[in-house]
Image 1 (cartoon, one colour):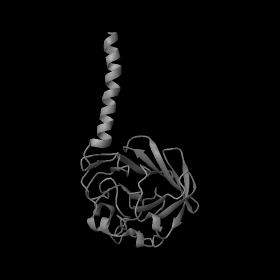
Image 2 (cartoon, rainbow, N blue to C red):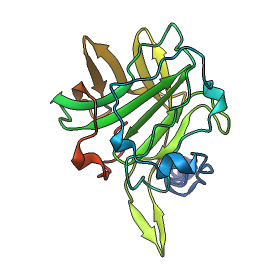
Image 3 (tube, rainbow, N blue to C red):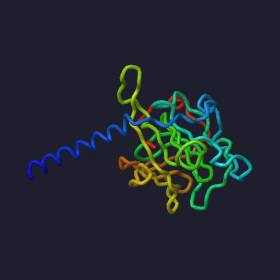
Image 4 (cartoon, helix red, strand yellow):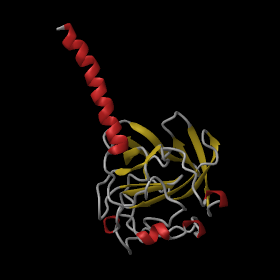
Length: 226
């Protein structure tokens, strides 16, 4: 009996580790649904202080394919995923659209673009594109990478997978791991700043920018900071 208990104590954690390793590195990625023209375009030349009116005159969130990261990271800052979407935001959502840079706290210099349309939110930063919400091609949750190559086998690159839901709860955009798990990241407004609470315990205050800094046109992936 004792041997069986000891064997279970070894095999159960080992099985869980192998499953999580497969899920994180070897499970199949979803098909790349992002519009090729969006990925090929240059998002660094846009004025992100000139935001579209969300008046319902254009496309709805469900009309636009899901945005996800090409490979382990994009090679240059792409065009916005939701550029043609004008669906109004729900009452529960704050408007945090725009281009932001960390100016105080844990990740000074961090730059990210936040898009919103209807119940959909897209965060583009550090080589990755995380898109949550209704779309025309895939599920609600983000299903992407951490943005950096961890190892290669032959000519194939492997990078850790990520999946999360971005849900507005009492004025805070909470990132729930896997869609059902704990809150690992928070974003919310503090006056004119956007506050980003990250899973490493840091809190970063970000200011709005109109144009992408030159040094961020080609990304330097820094892990799963979304």
